[in-house]
Amino acid sequence: MTTNRTFTMIKPDAVADGHTGAIIQLIEAAGFRIVAIKKTQLSADRAGQFYAVHQERPFYGDLCQYMSSGAIVPMILEKENAVADFRALIGATNPEQAAEGTIRKKFAKSVQANAIHGSDSDENAAIEGSFFFADLEKF
Image (cartoon, rainbow, N blue to C red; front, side, top):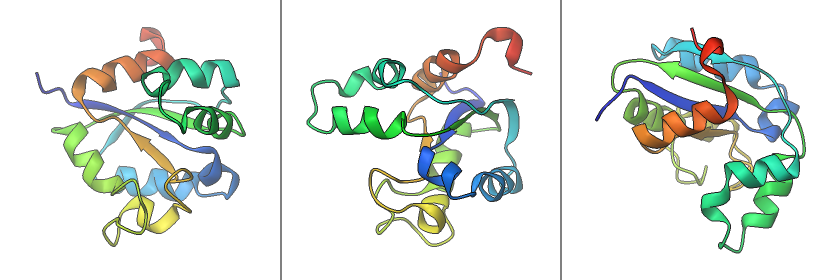
C-alpha cells in the first residue's frame, strides 16, 4: 500500500555543522509538508533499538555510537508518493555517488556521516515515525 507519508531524520553531523535549516528548506521547496518535527538526542541504547535490523552487521556498533553522538532532527513528511520522492531528494547513501543537487551531495561527509536518513518503504516509514512521535504529535 502506498501512503503519502515518510520519515526522515537529519543526522548528528549535519545538525552539528549547522545545516538543519538549509536541509529543511530543500525539503519544503520539494513540496513536502512537515507533519511532525523535533530536536532530540538518542542514547546508544535507543539508537540500537532504532537500528536493530542491522544488529548482525559489522557496522552496527559504530552506527549506534555515531547516531548517539549528537542532536538529531526527526521528521514525518507528507507528499504524494512521499517515500520514493524523498529517496530521490536525498540521493545515494554514498555522497560520492549521489546526484548533483541532492541533500547528500550537498551536505554529507561520508557513507556513515551522510547527513540524513530516509525511510525505504511505506511500512518502515510508519514504524520509524512511530518510534519518535506519538499520534498526538503528528499534525
